[in-house]
Amino acid sequence: MYSNEEREKHCKAGLRDFLQSSFYRSEKGKNLDETYFEKFDKERICIDKVFFVVYDDDYVCQDHPFDKELRDKFIQHVKRSRVSKGRFEQVLRKEFQYSAWELQLRGGRTMYFHVNVIHYLQQIHDIRPSNVIYDDNFLPVDSKLTILDFIKALRDFKVQAMDLYKEIVFNYWGVELQQIKVKLVQVELPFEVYPASVEDIALKLYSKGISFRKYNTQSGTIYLNQVETDNSVSVPERKYDKEDPIDSVDLKPDIHYLNKINSGKSRRKIQLKIYQKTFGLARIELTIYSEDAKQLFEWSLSDKSIAEDLINFVHFNLGLYDINVDRYDRSLDDVVRFLSQALKEPEDLIYQLKDLDIFEACEANRSVRQRLTRKGILIKLVDSDNVQKRGQYIVNPIIREFLNMYKPKGNEHFVKKSLYPGL
Image (tube, rainbow, N blue to C red):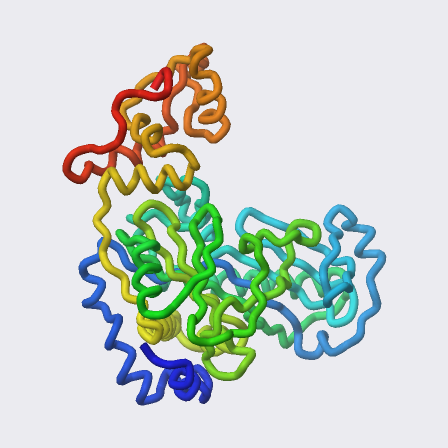
């Protein structure tokens, strides 16, 4: 694995120069290349959440007064937004299923956008992920969409955002903008592998001297930081993205750099997180910020050229940090353990759900029934006429499908004789 000094030395020139450098071209395939991943059922690079600003070169330089009339006209969409630490202002904000926007009513009257590209693609392709415990922010393992589909979707959304901004400024302020620009602020680039285990990745990296801050989130997030270097970054002791927001969504979020992966200047950092998105699907996510995002997403280039740069960039950074992923062929033992951790229930109870056809309610199982129903593990049985059967429950089909996808390793070692009445 390369030292921080070596990384900084080879990354100082700027991202595009770096991608063309002899060091990058000679090193990029050593740890991760296409043949390496032939053993996996699935390997893909995606685009997840993207934050960007839409503005006009001339219009943004003017100091416009606060538009009280427009605020009053759309008072139902008025929210408070953080301008700087301890300072807030009123803005117009609209939220949609996969995106949100925020319009400043004073000053440069810029417009801030957030889009979840994965949810956007789920919407336009009518895709819903299967086998979801909590988080549905990923495509099904058998999805045929590629990085080109993600880039095209982001490009299309960017054009829609520019058109919307131009239309709003013209309709309400009577100005026809001519030099509308888009500045990417933050882009999440997930690299997903199936079947693989985040715990395996974590153990291997730890053995190489890389430690983690692990947050007890539903997707099992792990953040990297180097053991041997003090990154001098204060990491709040909270769940990621659970900060109390201003009016529920902040499109200009405070950025906490949780590790010191540096692609050049001090303001150009990459955040790296590892998730277990669902059973068997491991995600290694690089979050890039304005400088790198600007150079990777050079919109004058074709989608194919941008895709090649993204693939090379992700693979190279994984190789630079020696993040190798091994295939992890799961068994019933593993899926029981996974569900036990995710649902916070004993392993033997989870195991017994596998063969449970009907759960009959009684006084003896009242406590466990209420707990499992509250968590959505048990759901009420409904007949063909859509009438609920009194006192009868079934296992949530998603959990049942998980449990029946895999066979046990050797002899089944979970408790078979029920400790829970009704199971």
